[in-house]
Amino acid sequence: MPNRLELTKNVLFFKCNSPNTDQEIDKILELATENKESNKNFVIDQFREKNRTHRGVDYTVSIKVFPTVRPVYFLDDDTFEDRIYAYILVIEINDYLVILSKSCSTFLAYVKEKFKLIDVAELSKLVGDNAEFQKIALRNMTVSEKAVRNRSYEGNDIRSSFSSHSAGRSIPSHLKIKEKGQIKSISSTGRIVESAPRQSIEEITDWAYSQIQLINTSKENNFLKNFAKKVSLGEVLSKCKPSALLIDVSAIEDKIEDGAIVLKYELFKKEKINGKVKKTKKYIKPSIRIYKKLFDQLGEIYELDQNLRVVNFESTSYVNKNKRVILPKNN
Image (cartoon, rainbow, N blue to C red):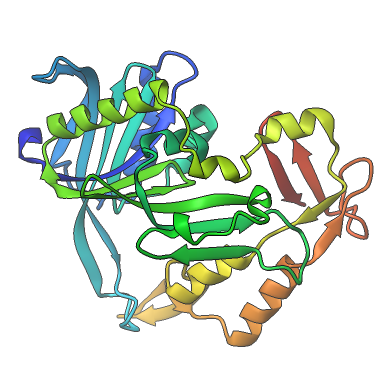
């Protein structure tokens, strides 16, 4: 059955800090399949099987293909559901983790905690100096409420017309490149998408291995050297202490407007149905006023005291800090 899989080159790359364990891979699969339809079996269920491609690439693969259901958002009736099939594919190649997924539950938070995300600076090694940059999205390094936070440029090849002024204060978040007739997209989430016909697991593995070799051996693209680089949170926290908390809500707002994030209330009430009292659940979409109030509060700057508690909210709100994460908390 796994040989029947035909997949697109839409892949996440992570670097493994230590040899992978059964528990780590199993946890990824467990989180990704939390939305599996109850009382249904996996269509494909394969765990850490070792293989070798015809080109001699050794890899370990784990696969889950399963049915899942999701609400029909355009009908105000909870009895209707969309039934689809989802999958997650985890390929282990040397000290890299390659993940392909579709319609799974959220698992990336765990993966980012356990493995190192390959950032744009590293992924830019996949781009040759003769590549045509058709689109680039930039994130400006500013906390000013009046400054432009995100910019996007698009053209046949923007290198010739792009001004490098202030490029050192911008970090690329998305790239679209044309090289040797192939269109490739690279994002700051560690995702690479390459336009190509659907391929088998073995073909995807060979392609992923070639990308890993480029990451390990190639130099950074000269054009992308003009831009700022991300600094890990661990490096910042080793030298600085947070004094304020600022949440950039622009990305959240965009996803809500695009429908990628759906906000809703869950209301529970007891109803008598066929002589029996049952608890029913109803979803209610928030009003525009609620959205505005939410964004206004999230968009404020919250000062922190020496104990990392939010000023004026010391008894209820504070920030947890460890080596890799700053996490807002509320009692």
